[in-house]
Amino acid sequence: MRTAEVQKNLRQLLGDIKSKEGLGIVLLVAIFYGWFPDSIKDLLSELLPGKWVSLSLLASSIVILLILYWLLKRLISKIAGIKYEVETYDQQELKKVKVLMMGLSMPRQDPIQGHNWSQQEFLLKKCLEQGAKLKKIVVIPSLESAKHSKDFVEYMRTRVDIEHDLFEFNEAVDYEDMLNLQRIFNKAIESLKAQGYKEKEILIDITAGTKTFSMVASSLTFDNDIRMCYVNNKKQVVIFDMVAVKEE
Image (cartoon, rainbow, N blue to C red):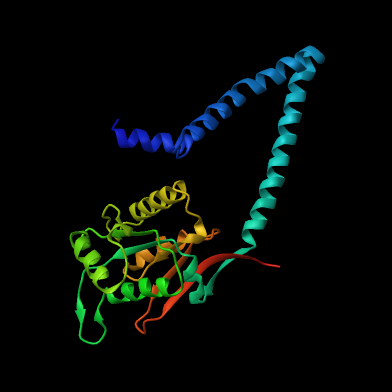
């Protein structure tokens, strides 16, 4: 069996274990289910006549199943009552930003709109105008645009008062590959959190991305303080978030 198939089967059996703590939890659960039922059976054998042991175990199993059913039914009803809506913010939200995550499009010059990178240029200027203390600009390029990384940095540095070392380029990714995009985004965000950045200090710019890029970015703002934005053709920064709203 190939390595990829083995990994897939292990994920289906044990879940996606990404840390030592996760592995520890799996081992503890395995030990619990291996020892606990036998311990209960031995205890009942000491306390009850032989014919009552099986009946007691059966009754206990039924009660536990009914409790689990009740708990799951309550959980499902709560989830069913949750809807998502878009919440927008004014540009003052930009002053909280310390990390800006963005895509990178192929450079092109439009006769009316000008250079397509000018929208991200505008975003950077607005962040600085609002008093944002930018520490990182994490760029996730596409497979095609990655070769223009240096040009992008130079373009921004000649137009925005910003340091070269703020730019951090992630590995290039196919913008239509949803799963890989999600992996790259999650990895980058987890790295930022490990460095001490808070969710409310992270802003994801989808101006340069594709529809798939935007969908993945949107999913990352669910039930947390990460915000998302884009710069429209009128050079306006639109900041928004996908938030959960519980029905009454």
